[in-house]
Length: 312
Image (cartoon, rainbow, N blue to C red; front, side, top):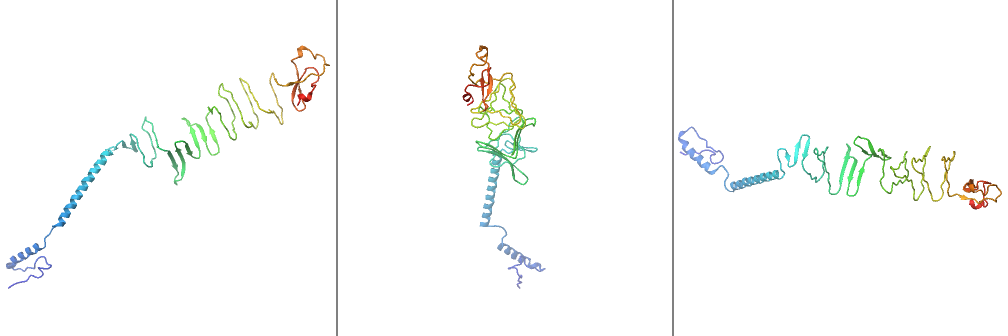
């Protein structure tokens, strides 16, 4: 009598067995035939593809490791940093030269103790500062032919902090004791110069000159021209005027010379001592109606024979 095991050849992996010991041998044979039909594992071309993928991953990992070691060797990575770049407390320390290909952002740049610092650019060098909103506040531009500083006020101070030169929008301040201009052409001022004191260098003359225009000196109270160990000369091409509106012109000197004044011919010899040889170099100073001065003989009237020729 034959017994059929339900679902043994379709879905159920193991046959349904009853508690009959005589049927165990046939159930084992059915299980073995089922396992022979459904093998567990990867076989055929799938197994070859898996091996090829594993080998490719191993090769890529070896190449990546070799490239990483090569980069570490070229950049000279070590426990202290990278090459000549050292990681120190508070920042980075560079022992050699650095080439910046783009922008450099740093709060402080210092040189090593006892060594100078050099900043070099192939075309130009620019340093800029910005405010908290990102707006440009100041800029320093160093080109191949000029130096530009865009700032509200420029100050140059000495080692003690004293102001030497200050330049702003409305004024330029020179804080040094002496402003020396060593150019042989002097200094050119387009509008006006305001100063309390003008002094020439030691053993050098002081010349105030206007080659093509006029030279004017104005003061609210006094103008003093003083030469302590030499002469003062004033010359002009046409007319030299001394004019006082509310006061007087005072010439205070032991001797006043006017060497190029015209000498008037004496009047007819009616006055005594007209031909006295002791009085040949003595004259009296006379003035024309138009203000011109001339010399006349010491005795007689302050007049000339041809006064129109003298006073012309």
